[in-house]
Image (cartoon, rainbow, N blue to C red; front, top):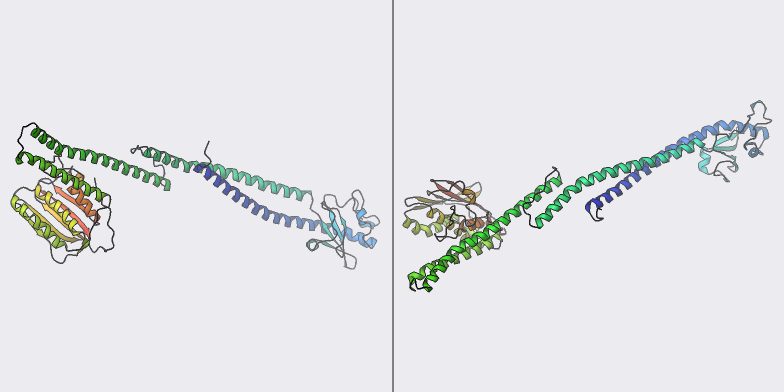
Length: 471
């Protein structure tokens, strides 16, 4: 049995109330309109019958000189018109009529044979429809009102019954259609409710069927999009947990092995023997710092100290910091930043961190004798920093994942190079915090280009945007 507070029951009750009110209003309107027309029709018939009976009563008055005895003459079984000469009418003239009301010239009722009976005086409304009775000189000597006959009463009864039956039939059809409509609407909502329950229980792979192109279908599509996003987030969370465990395992294994070797006397306690432990501790420290920074960035809690920043000067500072490293590696590092570029309203230190990450990757993957260029230009109303290298490039299958956490493009995912694998992920988050984005173009064997696009002329009241990672 459907619960009384369920949506389908509430909708049915609401629809039923609407149907009852609508059908009742229509029935009342139709009944009132038909009643008025029926009243006009009955009144016309009454006046016609009164006009037909009026000559007989007028002859009666002329013959008697008054209305004395008219009540007895109009009783059933009495032959009206005795002593009235050749114009007399035999039989009861009221046969088939709904009764008559006869009044004198002043409106005082002399005879009332209608079903209501008991009238003392004709009301003004009755006087307006009454048939006047005149004597030989044309003076009004009385008024005649003929009541409605049995046919009119039967017509009125049938009319009311027909309206009632039609209203009931229309209400039944409307409720039946409403029941079908309610089930049509409620069924997809029940499916969505079941889907929500399953998602809440952890079945993030569950999807609901999209059965219509209307608002409910759009709700189902958005539900599926939400479920897919939750599933991706859960997969990302699990992957992050596995990645962190993996990244911690290698340095901890090195530290443990080195400490056990020192405890067992395999190595003497010398600076050279402690150096690997120190290196791995530094790596763990960098990993913890990067994880903390990434967590703050993804939570939108990484503060940005914005100020007006010259993009050309920013690029020159970063390139100057990497100049000695590039010279040692035999790599040509150059900067192309024309004067007159639009300033940025940004956190200069965070943008330096973004460019530093990109230059670090470029130098690491560029062989001696290669080149790395940092170019700054305005493109389509936005500012673009391009870090181009002539290194090994990125394989097509690795391009969609370069900004994922801990992704290095090789199955071993080694941390032997001393890098945590979070640099590009953090750089992407910082760029998005400034309203920008980082994209990459690469061709294996021909080098890669990382493009940081940022908006120019940002209002100083712009709030810090949440920083999220594509991983």
